[in-house]
Amino acid sequence: MIIKEVSFPSADKKLQIFGNLSLPEQEQEDQSHLVPAIVVINGSGPLDRNGDVPQMKLRLNTSNQFAKHMTEDRLKDRTIAVLSYDKRGVGKSKQKGDKNLFYRTGMMDIVLDAVEAVRYVSVHPRIDESKIVLMGHSEGAIVLPIICREVKKNAGLADIFGCIFYSGFGETLEKALDLQRETILADIQLEKGMKGFILRSLITEAGLIKQYDQMRKKVHAEGDPDFISMKCGLVKLPAKWWREHMAYDFEGALKDNITCHCLAITGQKDVQVHNEPCLPGKAAAIVPLAASIESHRPINLTHSLRSIDGRAGILNIQREYTRMGKLPLDAELLSITDDWCDRRLFGL
Image (cartoon, rainbow, N blue to C red; front, side):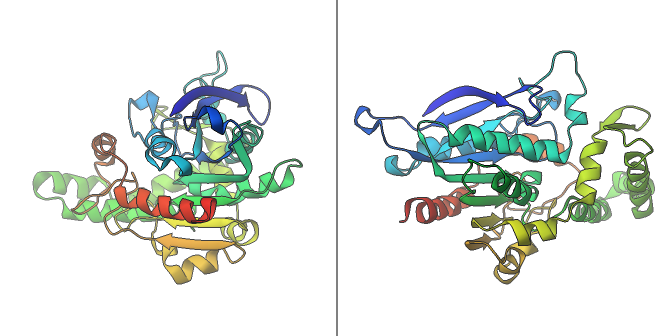
């Protein structure tokens, strides 16, 4: 595997987006052989090209493990290039002196930067521009139909060949937040002893809803701020990003803009997004114009793309992510993805 640091201009041309392009090793006699490519669209938060959160020192190791598997672990004649990159305001994708760049970035900025990533791989001399796939995880999966729409608008870019939805198919940000609130309350009820008593006293459904309503009010404040502060200024939130998510018709986007081959995987132990859209009957109705749709709900798969044996919870999610980040990506997840890639990209 060859890993090259690359860069391409952001959609607004105000900065360079940096990332890693992972390419299969190339034999001397295969100089003209073109390979498919997957562009990774990471989930919400200040994630870098590896799928990590540097400012929290949280190593999730999703994108880098995915790239290694696709580029190096597959059979030699079925390897796939992978591009993953630092979001605006993260890693090397920064503007000097602008500490709030990530928080001023909206959903459409993320979408349009992804289009530029597609443009970059489309003209790469080793990549087959007719076989470019998007892999979105979490929020990355939610915005895939918008990226497909924007790619179609760009003259000179081929339509996206395929979409891989990890933990976010048929979901919206607000539906996901409803599930997370329900899971938090359920987790609290299971806590025992003094800890459980204190949590049930401090965290209630009414309190969580009130907190969310206060956030919504700030997000929609006069002047449409790019970002807001919560909890006495201790927490920054990307207000522009929230407004755009709240306003967008994601159900319509999936129905109207997804015409490519699709693979959707959400685990049954994912406590951050609903897995029911991946039921076969529902999946086909969600993307009626798709060239094909295949969906799976692995029994033990979590939002971190790793599996667990016991009950999945959300109260200690950061600690769980730290632990999960040290583990390899789920073998079943990768096996399903490999089979789909073999059939769709290589005709096997």
